[in-house]
Length: 325
Image (cartoon, rainbow, N blue to C red):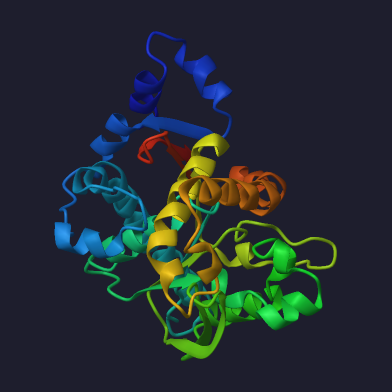
């Protein structure tokens, strides 16, 4: 595996020097990574994928086969190996085997495509015979309600770490990991831009994907534990900030013509903007909120990930970086 990756990523170079340059990661280009799919069957149809794509994302079945199928195979191997480890511990302690869900943390910037990545992985992993129950939890539901954010002067910092109810998120993930029979997950509406008075019940799944901007952060002095402590595997969706900013602007323009035009939308005031004003508004929001959050809080967690999906300007994954165990 390592030899294939290094040859494809650094043609003609010294493999040992290149390995050291990559630090703790083995880097694959898309072609070399696709070879690790082995005989994993493609279980998604074009109709399935259409339901999983995010706004202005053009993930194809070919990219699913090359990038996400090998990743689902790797995760399937890790899930089964972790189950065996838990069984060994239970045998040693003389206890009945407990069902412990495998938890995957997935992070990345606004507009980088992490939600689509999470949904594709959920669909693929749920079709492996050993773990049909795969739950997806987004941390949006753990944002403080708008009323609380306004009271604390944090509405312009929504998505920053301090805007989340991290204690509630930690409690929920801890309960899931401990095998609680039913755990309540708060829900969020992007239409009204607020937490709802509704919950989703999670009941002892095989795998849980926790997706959010800041899920790879570690606890500080005031928080000796953090949600990332409960993850078995972590993924970061990465791209150059210039590309993400462009994708954010494109998404804003699309939403202006779709969701923003809904009378219930929190952003209804943006629906009538002309193109030039809409672009300047989107860039202003990026420069004031999303860009600073990326540089200060999200990007610094990238090196904590077990695997990094690197996207090029076309929104497709061009490299995969896998941490050496």
